[in-house]
Image (cartoon, rainbow over all chains, first blue to last red; front, side, top):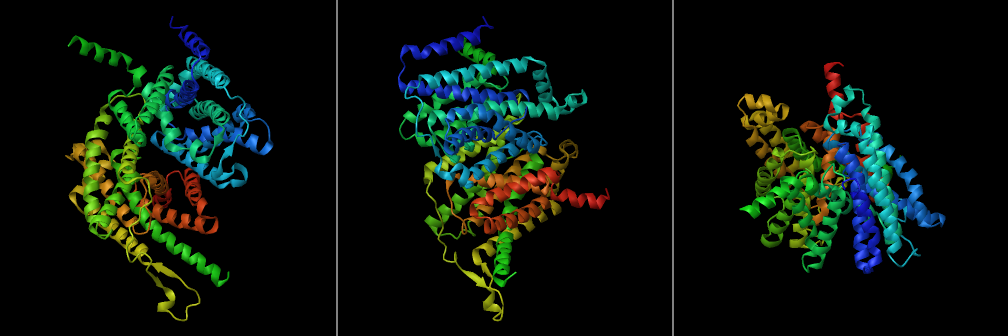
Length: 312
Length: 309
């Protein structure tokens, strides 16, 4: 049962459009899956390899801009951005990794945060390539219906789920966890930590970049402030994983369901919409203090608390 | 080099140094917290934003000069810092989690809440305190009639710079000459040893977080006569503070001052010669260059010389 769970869930998700959901619900579903893809990517680097990145917007934005620039400058379909971004994002990940991976712990986090900001400012200022603050608009939408977008992101989601699972259950995964637990000890056991950290970063970056390229195609408009956003991309990515569960396979999925629905819920309540960062911030603080391993990671703890209340 | 070019260069250097003095004050607060607590406070810029709003409210409702409001903003920020440390950060230090960076993520959450509350209370409009000396300046030609070039020194900038110097000097006095300051430095050097020597480490941590917040709050008051104010400005200054601490070497107070001055001058040079929009990139170019070439920060260069390595 446990082995078949991913297949069952992806099968159920694939059936969902058949029951005739409204366009709004399809949009929510697409967002949930997109965020879980980014969350899974972050989880690979942050949760398993222990390198907490505050700058995943950098990779998301590079992926998104690859698709946007291909469309805008070369006049080819923005869907080419998905395969091309794999290459471009890897190059960026190698450069960022070269600079940031020499930092440890919280300093790595801040280094990546700075990288995200650098790329945002560059995208704002290199107007000849990126159109600057005007942004890039995809003028012809591929489909009006959201069904196909849904299937594309679903395929992306399922592929990244199995990729992360495969990697973590292989020898590579054990190296990652060893680096997270004690980098110096891992190094002294003969693990080339720089190599494996770079590998984790590249894998994570490529998956995030693919989500970014998908975002350009799906939303049809990008500008530096949207795709390189610190709070709305980088921090939300961390929150998706923290809320769901760090270093668990299902954490990012559960986390993105909670986060996307919470964001929509707050938005529907009038006057509270402006305060959505307060809610996110408080949620983050509460999660860190009471459920440091997220809903999935601390599930036994949660269950116990509920049972205790019912009994008492 | 023509006299106009020289004029531009000198003027750029002057404004860079003045800006750098203020940056140094922000950096010192961050470095203190980093040294004693071994955590990075990502809500640092937001605390500065709170200090600025305190000054703004005092100015707009009671007409208190922003420089005088330091006396009120610093204690307010001190209390806020102590509360954050005591009730939010300390509990997290005790929680077992897979990711050790939990505290950093926690400060991000705190920063988000602070910025968002400021948006709700004050709206996201740009605010200024229109003090009457805002555009006053001293000109070189007023003092030296035959001067071949013309330089100016803006009054609020210079006053802010001088106040920043005074605060830095008194902080230095506090850290090196008083008992409490010595305990703080001992805690940052070696927590266990300080504990064994009878230093109340827990109390020092709470106090340092308050002190760091008070410093950045007063930096906010110094910034407000020359800068504008909006709720999301915190993030930018958090990054500046972080770049300064990396530049100066982690946890080094002198390094933070040197780093702040370098950053101020470099940023003003990029703003003049590459365009305003590129100033933040200049900031991070330095950051990346330091990480690659001098990973220990500027101060490590001096240390090497001294020990003869």
